[in-house]
Length: 274
Picture 1 (cartoon, one colour):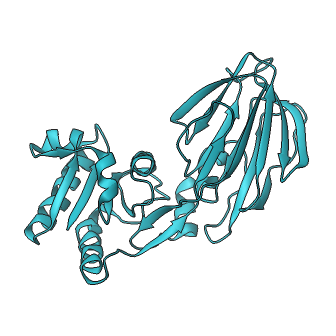
Picture 2: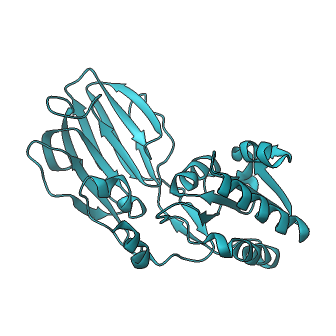
Picture 3: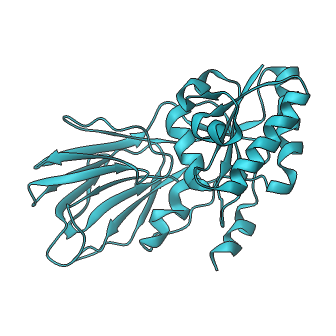
């Protein structure tokens, strides 16, 4: 059995904890591969994160950003998140219990072939010339810059029906998982993880519509015009520029992400937002 471990880059606490998890698993006869950056710090052999997609589980040690980094590279491979960040909605395991929780899931893999996990939706954005990876949190279509007299002209349709047509900094579509991320900073609603819904949220619109929670099976179409180019972003880090006019369609990807290990207490995690 091979297990992948990825630690937040530049975080010594995460690196040390990744080393502790690795050492514990190795002592139990598990083959552990560590991401190349962390491996260099630990002075062990490294492995590209993309190669970990073939393993039964990958351990992400860091904050939600590290989890998203891993998820973009391993697809539907279950990821167990160990939280060394501040909020950590995607990371249910604390540093103090990391080695025990990882060991529990390894035993489940030995017994059943898979760890405990739950599927969470990812978003696919498609359009002419557009090729960005699926998003676990949100897809954003926005103008070259934010602010007054910037942004884009946007027309949004949901399953073909018009929702809004306005000038805005951008249009954001979030999963329930992503409702606590960029969507929240744009005054969007929180969506409980058990609710199979998506959020459509205008960003600083001139004539705003309230943010809308829609069925997860819906298709959202954003027609963007105004500036010469607009940018489409997946989880804030993967970006691509499109010439206008541009039409971007957002729907749930056919392959979900998978969060391994125990479930986090969503309502308790919200306390960290205060």
